[in-house]
Image (cartoon, rainbow, N blue to C red):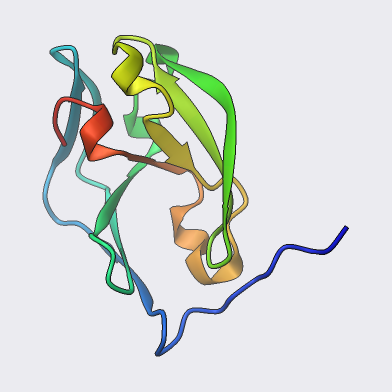
Amino acid sequence: MSAKPLNIPGRGHPITIERNPLRVRVIVAGRTIANTTDALTLRAANYPPVQYVPRKDVEMSLLRRSDHTSYCPYKGEASYYNVMLGDERSVNAIWTYETPYPSVVAIKDHVAFYPERVDSI
């Protein structure tokens, strides 16, 4: 079995992580499931910016870990969560890198939300 590739961000695929000075709220089924002023904004290459919310500011009791995983050669192995308040649209709505690669270690203990799988961010 071959090892998964590990890519380092650079000119061809830049990644930046900055503190977001604004409040970030995530709502599902009319309920706030995340509310923070400590979000991190990750920008990677030409992808839309992603808000990473600290787990401490997420209602983790409303989430259920999924069996789904994915891999990013720049960030590592991602785990997923379903939002229990949502319908089928909220399956695998949240991802997290529990052991991110060193270049993105700042997103450890944070989660991100697919905008189309929650009511609003």
